[in-house]
Amino acid sequence: MNREYLECDRRRVAPVRERVLRCLRRGDRWTPARLEAACDANWATVSAKLRDLRKAEHGRWNVQRARRAGSGTWEYWIDPARPTIDEGCPEQMEMALG
Image (tube, rainbow, N blue to C red; front, side, top):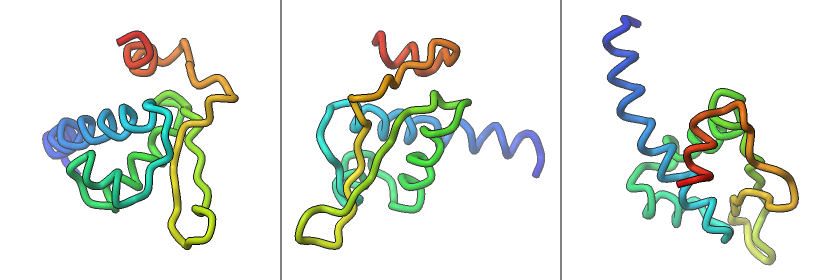
């Protein structure tokens, strides 16, 4: 892949990651369908952004998932019982303060 393509792709997906994080920071549990609608992105993209948020370069957010009781539907959330702020990650600090 060339550098120009990678830069274009980064600009395209970064806003989706930010929208996913904003949703999760609200404190509720989110189903895939709800995240897709709120983030205006398909599940493949949203799912990839959930994985990204767990990585060091995107803040090591404590993204959890579990099956909804009585259903096969997964729910996603940030676990408030564990610290989620990585002061070494400027992106996460900006989101936490803003």
